[in-house]
Image 1 (cartoon, one colour):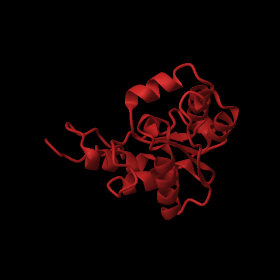
Image 2 (tube, one colour):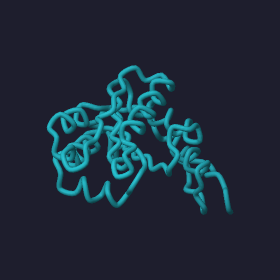
Image 3 (cartoon, helix red, strand yellow):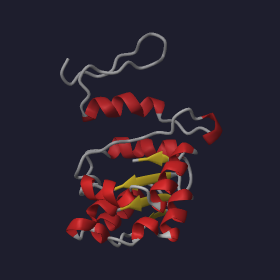
Image 4 (cartoon, helix red, strand yellow):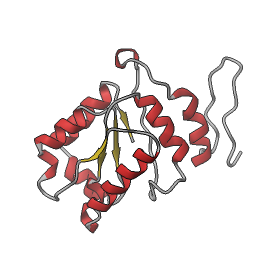
Length: 166
């Protein structure tokens, strides 16, 4: 079933596709990503995207993430782009992208390698957001930088409270 789309089970619930590609992910998660109160969420939405974000391939999924987040701040965390020196550009691209999708309150936290992971202002921005988007770049650097940090604790707490994480 390569590239198969999820089918309705007759109960109104979607079934998982045997092989999940980008299109299948969008079709599977789009119907279930609806805004609800944080208290009623069993699991906050989590959107995993590959590289080349903000170039259109994930537009439908990003729009679904905005709908799921509801009104409120969108925060771009460009940490993974820091090792290549692309954090400013990645943050600016994210702000431009989500504003283009209709979000009005979008900001980038910026990132300074070796200092931002425990920055109280970044942790506060993340905690106050409804959608946190962590840009692409180096997964290894991202994991090492966030491990045990104040920003990672804020991301985890926000997601547990209903914030969409992408």
